[in-house]
Image (tube, rainbow, N blue to C red; front, side):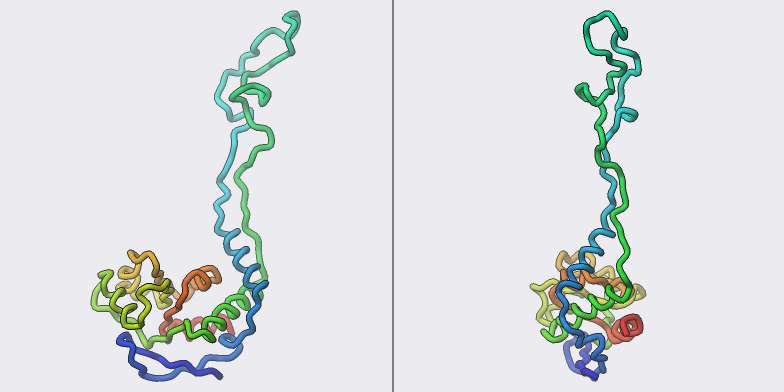
Length: 208
């Protein structure tokens, strides 16, 4: 078992927490991480891009000229793809880009990222995060005490901590999330991760 120091919001050590090696000492697997990030980003795509075919383009359905006798090619509609401002043939249509990835593979990718950050001392465990108010400066003061003001920080706690969620939402380089929302993309995007003891224990129940 690995051990990590637990701090209070004043950056004073108060206790220690045991972390299983199966989660926080997982080998770095860059290809698995790449696969997990690719899967996450594909699942986030809305896929709402579209072009209009000849049935959806605005225009009259009247036949432009008679079928025979004009010397011109026959033409039945002004919305034909052959004409200017006509419909698009085989253009992009709304689609679902999401695809499934094995649950075990996704969890192992997250373990790999968390383990790498733990080895590089980028994970900080706090006993709890109780702010005095929901003002933005409360989170700024918290980060300054941990010398993380100029860094991107992911704070993991519970949605029930409304003071934290409201206080952190206006900081461009900080994101506060519930422990159930932690994912491979945010774990890589943010330089440091600050987690409460409750969030760590809840996360371990899923990743073990």
